[in-house]
Image (tube, rainbow over all chains, first blue to last red; front, side):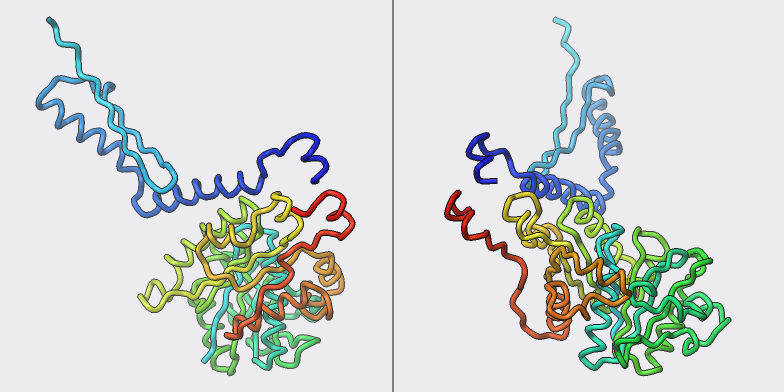
Length: 86
Length: 271
């Protein structure tokens, strides 16, 4: 092992990869179990309803996305407003 | 007071039956009157591991259905005076296990003065596995240092916390213990295997022991002798430690460090 790694350079240890993958998957599965995680479509519908009261937007132009990073989650809401006719 | 201990894992092939047999034998060797029940209805194996397969007349489902008395179905272990085996049925399926039926058997064992009831869970998260953990006071989560096993253990922990009687009745939760099995210190050292610390950090359950990967486990099952009886082997010693820790004794972890051969160390440098 030592000799091989000297000759060919150190590769990333697979156990470390396994741990990273498990940390992500376990965090995600706990999150979804606690909260149901299927609130995103509902949130998207309600956002569309609220925004439509003030601006006319295309429902497809509102994107809601939940992302997990290490210890925190990022809820990303992307709204494309219609071009104003000048 | 009888304590019910489930040995579970979610994933199959990680060492639940090996552990159930060794752990139950270990409790009996320490003088406790112990029953070990095979919940794997349809695919019974515990009788083979315990070496009592030729003495099975009645099984767990017979008792649940009232076709046999519990005392007729319990098989006295050949190695330990106060250990009894309740085998699973070969011919029925897991739907034969009803909650009322399982409860009746456990109540009766309590009545017969058993100190410990060890429930050997089937793999999976279906009826048999849920029945095995329903009445548990404590759980031994058997996990291999491998991705699918760790994830499945995490799943079964969730089920334990939601479906056990203790949680349903809002009592003190089931006491969980993590047992890492088939551990290879060399592969951990080489970065090829998750360490027991990694597994514990991922699952967040107190560690009760580490059982090294060993050829003795196959020797034990070949002969129908629980691995704890193979005196002088790492596996036997590791299970003795697990039983001691379960009973509240302090034992340092053994068989978790790899000693590199001296010559290699001098030639290529230690790691």
